[in-house]
Structure formats: structure tokens, C-alpha cells
Length: 599
Image (tube, rainbow, N blue to C red; front, side, top):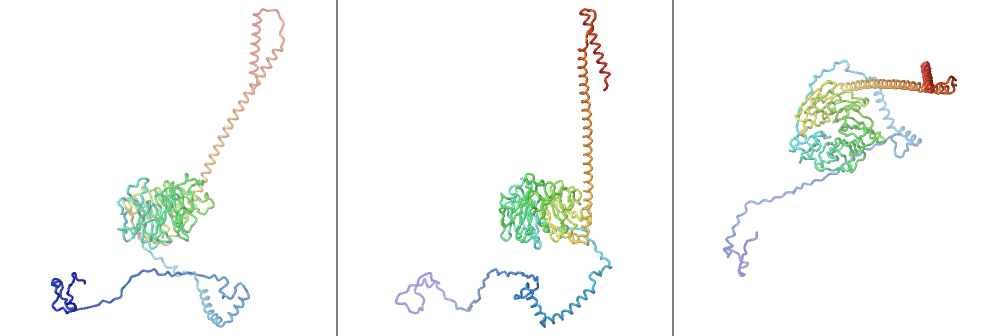
């Protein structure tokens, strides 16, 4: 340490031993005697440093060889017969080859004889009685509740399960009332961890409220969202809460995007969307500047956007990669083929049966030809073979239906939600008139539902943004014995019945049409007969008028040619009276002739 003051000493005293201290008493008072050192130690250790580094990924590759002509060495050309024969003779003469064939030949012969002696179609437990399984009554219980953390409540419009493990749930929040969104309403949507309902795990921040939200099945970090303003947004949760890719507004939809689905492509970057503006657009998230393809939902096949039907729901099955279905606001289901040659051929057929918008549309996971629609007050099951009407339907409920979905593990079970906050679980093998289980989830309306892949958990979103997680009983999420065969036979029976009814209705319509055409022909014949009678009467009248006119002319000419008689002279007055009498006689004769003329 450096002393706070300087020590001053004369030149003569330099170098002498200091015995009595410093001459500067003031400085001496600042100093103190040091105590002797009793303990001393030294620390010696290696410094530790924490460094993180990414290791190089070990890339694996699978290779195979197609042995069309067998595995041949490099120096042998399998296309040349002489080289192959020479190589075979060389191998067949090898002692090791001969010994191996002799040893393996006896083993193979024993296995072949044993296989021939066993009946592979024999049933060993055919006579045993089937074990009776106690059937559990269908039930469901609430596991968790996820509430919208915002003060201004919004509706939960769409749900999506995490593809890996199903331990997370993505929820889209929006207000679907046109121009009734409250001021200051948040645009955020959330990803919830099922074990932590207090706080969302990830916050998604779009430019406009999300109507739909879907996980990418090939990359669980990527999500696709359809916005209320018609744009399509894409997130990568590894990059944060902000939008990673966003479609340009001039090439996006004009109305809210009510349907967005990922396609099963090799790259995992293709998707398509549908909106109430009457358009279906295909996108590649690597280039969101404009859609790759657009289809206009004009059922008149004139490609006019003004007459297109607005899309509310969208359906795509990966096993049918070229087909997709659209549920419209007008209650019509449009079946489309993306790979058609012309735009008019892309609309294959339509199914009409609902009185209002179709809020849910999904194919049966076990029987893709049959699909479920939910709208107005009913849920209907359709078959692609019967286009006139649905093959099965529920009764008309007092409350409006809002969403529906098939069970992924049971072909005869589906779920529906209603405006009164009720969740209905239907099992048409067990009961067709009423739901197998009806559960009151909340007091407000339920807007959406989504079933987990294993069928055990159901998530329901409400009008106030509350998402309720339910667990169903084992009987509702376990495939029952012979359920596939029973469901298949029911579908086939109802489809056959509808076809018979369609044929009868077609015959009745043809008969009515024939009767109507027959009535029209009779009326036409009567009108023709009346017209002919009038024409004949008119012709007769004209004919007789012409005859009478000719007769008058002839009589007048005859009177002119007749000579006057010579008699006595009479006066002028007498002559006039004679002429009048003659004219009267002539008129009487003419009237008599006319009366005697036959008609």
C-alpha cells in the first residue's frame, strides 16, 4: 500500500538503522505494529470453463441393390451367358459349397415335410365359449380447463393437437361476428401444455385474429393459421412468436379463412385453404407470395366468382390425394377432383341435404366412402354412391349444432357439439335414435371440438374462449368386437335402401311427368278440334254467302231480260202500283227459294 503522506529525512541520516522510530511524530502516529503471522495458506485449483458446441450429425443412408440376375462379382457380366456358366461351374466344384448344400439340404427337407404335415388353417379354440366382458356404461369426465387470459373474451374457433405425443394443444381465438369485434381485442392465439392450464406455453402473434390453426404432421414446430382478413400465416416455434411466412393480401382470400389443411407431400410444405369468398387455394409455405392453384366453387361450372358458393368447412383424406370436399354456407357439399383436366371438371358432384351452413365435414377413417356432415339441427352420414340424400341422420335437436368429428379408433362413434353447451357422443351400432352419452360441458355455446389420435381425450372450445379437456371411458375409445363388420353392414344396408328409394322416386317423377305431358296433349287436341270446328263453320258461312250473292245476281239478270206485257194504257199512278206489286211478288219468290234451298 502507498502511504498517504511522504517521509522526509535529512541527507545525513540516510542509510542508518531506525531505532527510535521516525522523526516525524505525525507520520509515526499513523503507523501500527504488524502482528506476527500465525497461519498461512495457498489455494491451487484448475479453472473450469463451460463451453457448448453442436456435435456433427451422423447421417445414415440406406442403400440397396436389385439382384435381377443374382449377385455376381464385378468381373462377371451377368448379360453374357458364357461367363455366368463358367462361374457357376467353378462355384459348384468348390468343396465348401458342396458341404454346405449337403448339410442344409437335409434341414430344408425336414422343414418342408413338417410344413406339409401341419394344417395351417386348423382352429384350435373354436369350441371354447366366448368370455363375457362386462360392458361399462359410457361416461366422460373433465380433466382440465384452459381459459383465455385476455380481459376481452374471444371465441375459441379452432383446435389442433400436437402430432408428437399429443401433449400440447393449439387454440385459435377470434370473434366471428361481422364488424362486432370489440375495441382493443387481442389478436393472439396460444399453444397450451396439457399439464399447465395457468399460462400458455407459446404465444402466437398474427396480424389478424386466427380462425383456423393446424400443426404440420411432418414438422411439429411449424403451424399454419388462417386469418380473419383472408391471409394465410405460418409459424416456426423455434424462431419465436412472430409470423415466419405470410401471404400477400392482394393474392389472398377476400373473406375469413374457415378451412386450412396440410397436404401429404414429400416436402411437407404444401397446404390448401378455403374461404367464404368461394375460392380454394393451394400454397407452398416456401413461397407465400401467391397461390400455386385456385379453384372457384361455382357449381354451374362457369368459373364465375360472383355465383360461387362460400366455403365453411374443408375435408381432405391422405389416402385419396386427388380428392377433396367442401362444405358451403348454402348447405351443399361439393366433391372436387384437383387433377381434373379442365376447371369445370374439377367439380365432380354435389350433395344437398342441410338447411344452413355445414360447420363440420369429415370422412370416416375406416370407410372413406362414408362421410359426416354437421349443420342446422342435425348430423348426417352420407355415402358417395348415394347422391340424392343422406343414408343416416340424427333427429332434429332444439339447439343448433356447431361441430362434429368421427372417433379415430371406433368406426361407429362420432361426436357433436351444440349451442346449448352440450357434447353428444353417438354410437349407431348401440343406439341410432338417441346419443349414447350427452354431457353438459359449459353454460355457453360450444363452437369447436377436436379428438385426440388415440380417441381417449376430447377438447371442446366455447364461445367465451374456454377450452375444456375431457376424457372418455374405455368403452368409447376401444375397438369393440366385430364392430367394423357391423358398421360396414349398416352402411351397406342403408346405402342399398336409399338407392331403392331413389329409384322409386325417379319412377314416380317420370310417371308424373308422363301424366303431365299426356294432359298437355289432350288439351292440345281439344284446342285443335275446337279450332277445326270454328274453321268449318266459318267456311260454310262464307260458302253460303257466296251462293246467295250469285243467286241474286242471276235473278237480277233474268228480270232484266224478261219482256214487258202489252196492255191497255194506264195512268201513271196505276203503273207505279203495278210495279210495286210485281216487286213484292219477286221478293216473296226469292224468300221462298232461299227457304227451300237445302243446307
